[in-house]
Structures are given as C-alpha cells and as structure tokens.
Length: 374
Image 1: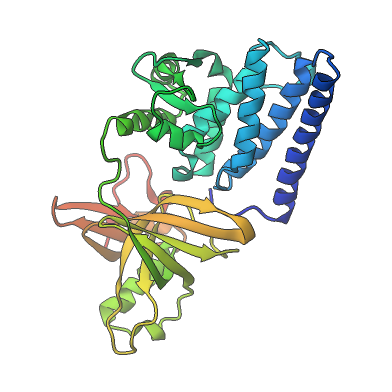
Image 2 (image 1 turned 90 degrees about the vertical axis):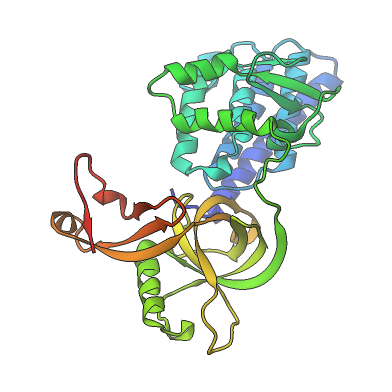
C-alpha cells in the first residue's frame, strides 16, 4: 500500500503495453482505409492493453495520461458507432475474469477514474477493479441524465473523467453515465467495497454544491521537511516537548517544497525514491526549513489524503491538518507484549469536541481488546 513511483521496469512495461495497443490501432486504421471490415477483436485487444497500462499506473498513484484516455475514449466511441461496443469477445481471446466487451473495459476504467483513485490505498483500487469487472453491465451511457446517480462524461477528450464528472455542463460533448443500478448493487452486496460506494456518493453530493472546497488554496513556495512514520513522529514530538533545537534532531527527514496551503490542508512536492513509502491515511509532521537557529520550530501535524506520482519519481501529496493536539504516548501492559517493541503511539486531542483518538500500529487493534497507553 506504499505510494512508490513506477520503477524502470514498470515504466518500460507501461510503454510496451501502450505501443502494442497503438500497433493494433494502426492495423485497424489500415483495414478501414482499405475498405475491409475491421474485426472487433482488434479494437478489444487495443483497449485491453491500454486498460492494463492504466491499471498499473493507478496502483502507483500515477497521474492520468491524457493521451491514453483519449485513445480509450476514441476506441469506445468508434466501437459504439459501429454497433460492436457490447459485442461479446470469445473467452480464448481474453484473460479469465476480465470484461468480455469493449464497453465493459471502458466502463470499468471510467468508474475508477471518476472515483479519484489518488485518495485511496492501492489495495482499495485493486478491490474496486475486481468488484466492478462482473458488474459493468449495470452501467449505461445516455444522452440525457437518468436517475439520481448520473455522472457527466466528456466525449470530446478535452477533459479528464474526474474533471468532467465534477464540472461538465449539458452540451453536444456531454453524455451521462447512469449508475443507479450499479450503486444499488454496491449497497446490496455485502462483499462490495464500501470505499467505492462512498466515493460515488461523495462525487454526486459534490456536484450539488456550489463550492467543492472548504477554503481556497493559497500558492506557496517554501522549503519544508517531512517526518514520517509513527516512531519518527513520536521521537520528534518528544524532542519538541524537551525543547530540542531542530538542528540537533538525528531523525531522517524528507526534504520537500510546500506549493500551496489552505486553512485545513496543504500540498507538498518531493523527490523520490523514498526509503519509506508514503501511504494515504498515514500521519506526518511538516516542519518549515530555513528558520534561524534560535527560532522555535514552525509546522503542523497532518494526515496524507492524496498522492500523485510523476516523471523522474517526483511525488506530490495533499495533506489534511490534524486538528487539536498530538501527544506522544507509549503502549503498556499486555498489548505492549504483543507488539514486539513497537509500542510508540500518538493521541490526538480535539479540543473543540473533547474527543481523544489513538493513532497506533494496526497490529494493536484487536476486537474486544482494551489498550492502555501512558
């Protein structure tokens, strides 16, 4: 579940899959130019290869490549125009458990893209992928919005799926993904990923709001250092409690640059590869760099809410500030014996609500257990 950028081998694999897909499309174009009927299987293979490349990138938080999405969109629209988008492909020509039509491949990719995979763990995206595969038949693309869960889709290729789902307006380049039956099955199926249902619900609710952000972002360009991992955060908070200077800390921090901030969050850019991969939902400390030696540390605690990876292993993260105080604690008692020395934890105290939340290793959370901390 760590957000590691694509390594050299994975990048090469994505390039090969894309080039193979383009090879099938060149074959299709030659057949069209010669006036010969084009086999549906040729388009299906191209779509399947592009979908595989897209899925690899989703699992590494890679930004959606506009060219790849436009190719997938063009294949689907051409197949739909020819009346073969929903034509069943022989099982011998596709992998077991994969969609059996061009439409199925396209709808699965579309659903994952509009649900913003950069906010979720790779394991969650893989679960979306598995569950959506046999349920793409519950989705439909229409000229006019139908039902409560109608998601706008830009068919011109000018907008990404997520951008069109959030901001597209009625027009000649807008179609609508009718997802009511799909969402109903999500609600009825006990094995369906709850995060997918929540993502679709949040998307629809967000469209009904005039302003989707709580507060405006303000551009920034300031060096920071990120301290990541429970043990490191615990140690740094203890150092701050004791009044240690930032320069005396022996903790390994990741250099980064703050690119924007708002009242409740911020965004940072950093350069990989990272020794410890970043994960959505995990806490971190952000400290401003370059302060005077006698100045008090400036920064805040936050949780990672969004991750992007780009070229040359560049990473951009969006964080949500942790409200209230963050207190270093140590797990004690019977639970501490089970953790094999991993006893560092944090308590978040929200002064507005009076609520205390324990942030600790997942291994200590066992049903029915009571955890003691000092």
